[in-house]
Length: 405
Length: 53
Image (cartoon, rainbow over all chains, first blue to last red; front, side, top):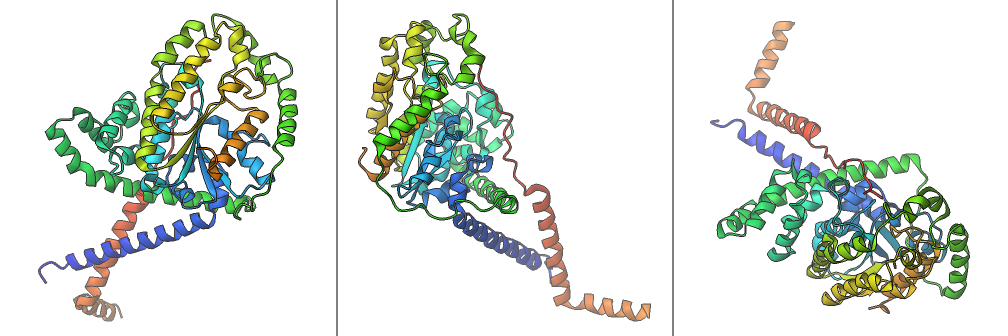
């Protein structure tokens, strides 16, 4: 035999592929079986991976919400907990970490890719990103970065080249996150160069991008498996059953209960700040040196890169074929009035947000009519108070039932 | 006794089926080793830093 190693090497390779395929399938079965428990929780692998996020989109009785730290609350009126106590026929699956902005969200959704098509998805925005800073800092963006999501976005076949170029331009602002990702860097640079040669190189690298994504997905599934196994060893299984059938809710009574709870939580200041937060930051919040100024507000409302990222996110949702809803908290009108940032200034934010949502034909609930309420949010970062959550809950029910468009 | 074993092993090595199976196991071992070393993904993110107040 001239090549005695060829046949054994081929058999070993095929056996490996077979073992990986079976393992992958079994892990997917496990994720599907535990999906209600996994959907319920926010844990790192769910946020930086794709296995759980994609599995959530397979279930019509799960509504994914992409957002930020506001989703981590343990408020009993928050959608995650509220719909357990008041069954409405579906459960929510929160996805997000601290300061997860539109640029990170769009990559998560692009990573799920065609699984999003025709599915409902909710995006929860934090307004301060649009008027309180020019853009998310590198350290913060890095804390939300996922190589899998970035590779899937840049080498996506579901998104247009023009959209991918827009996303690449934004990713290039954060080069350190791509330092160890050669294919990702190459993809970003080739997209941005936009010459016939670079486009050709991009398409040549496309299969490699998909191969890297395939490997990262296998690793993601393995990490998810380890998480599920650890969960079943340490905690009694929770929320493994599908959500109960919908019951009629008395929203008026729920609003009244949430209002009482909200006001108790914030009753040491006239603006609606959570009591401990106010005690800790009162000086900074009322000092012109440290608090947001009228000039800052006006400048960032016009120039923040977050607007560009929101535009990219809505384009991504539309190109993926999602049925999406944008939720945003109102601003702390009473507090900003006291800082001289009056309703006219604040309307710049609401108007611009509405214009962008309308341009992409995406329904928006930004609750601008509740701008001066002191029981909607508990701080300027957009963390919701109980009453704010009830408004969100109602919007989610309307959206899920197709009555909010 | 040792001679008997050596003779048996030499005879086995001469068998093409045994060689093929041994080589397959050898390659499987290499692949398993590579997966064990490099297969585990790194999905860790840097510590989160909140932007200034």
